[in-house]
Length: 118
Image (tube, rainbow, N blue to C red; front, top):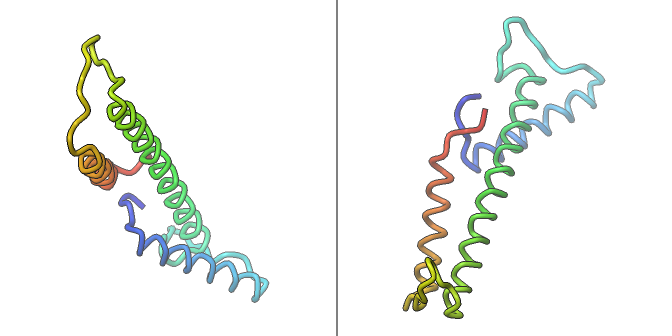
């Protein structure tokens, strides 16, 4: 799949994958496969694509969490008045919590616009 699914679509795909796996186990049959490949019908491709999308989503979430943690660390340093960018003392911003919330929204927006990893 070339496009990145939203959370609702990813949840639907996970549920569908679990249903397909349960069906295969209950029937004692291997996954449905065809030539040429049909990514929506073929169990093996559908399930593997879903796992790949979940893996990518977890990776993006970890990257976003790391960026937000760095922003929080920087904001806390600024609030203590200890940040000295370029050797000059800088006063903490007045509305630090509002600035941090805006920074988090920016990170989330940029993450949603980031192309899917190959």
